Length: 391
Image (tube, rainbow, N blue to C red; front, side, top):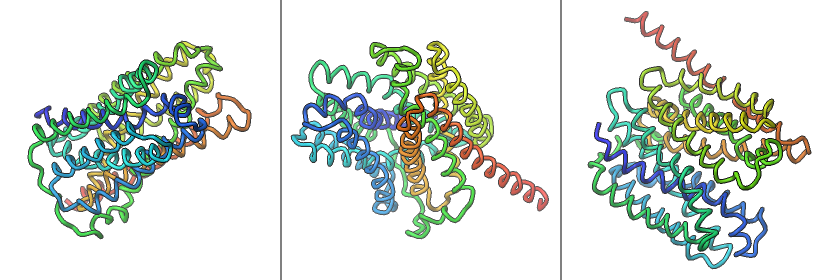
């Protein structure tokens, strides 16, 4: 398996990861510079997520007949423009628009990239290939977010967007040089692009993706305040904690991809979600024990990204004729899960119940993801049994 095309795709997901996650560490600096409140600055994160949800299906509707390599290059151009706009923004409204534009290529890049990676990793190694592509996103949490915070303190919050835009140029070059020509997907028309939504297995995968992501974000959205108020780890631990969580994401993503090569992807995903549910319950019980809380944080961050390769592989399996749209829906499910988790996980905090409750709610949400995968596996086992009787 030629790794260069996968490295080009990973370069793209690294840039997208920086653009998505870096704003979380920049909010105080952006708010002060733009004369906005912290909640107003927080809408810059939401604007990116809205861009993801709009851009993924829109790209499919516009470009599903075009060669895949050309689509990837076009998405890289939009990424460069969006981050250049953020660097040059002179008002809150312009920065809000820039964040929306920056989010437009995110879901579509992952969707098209999953198809390309699946072709490169043919012969049962598609989940491993997808995990290598996704590695860029996990590395962004280890390198990009701390780099952005450091640049904001040393130079300006704008600096990281200049770096991101420049990285987009590097990504374009890598895509141009290393991605072989990719033929367009079969033209099944607009109706064909949405046909997968009539099949229960695809809906189970989308549900499992949304609930598993949402479950962990119930807790992860508030990890720093929890570590501060309950585990006694002050602000000086902030960067170290984020690097440790990012390292867990890198390891979990690659482990999930490798496991899904040698075992049924849906079962790997279901058992991983069961483990995550147990660890969320442990986090609620031991949130005030620093060493245990940090270890659980690394494990849960790893599980968050271990689900992704299997989920992306499964949706491609059940979306013949509409793979690009289906892969885009997985990215929408990821982002809806993030939004759902952050909202639901924040409810007990607003009610004054404290930071021990978000992981408890996360465990409940995760049970819905496990149920989706149980239904998926039951249906697939029944289909296999019927096929065996026919033979």
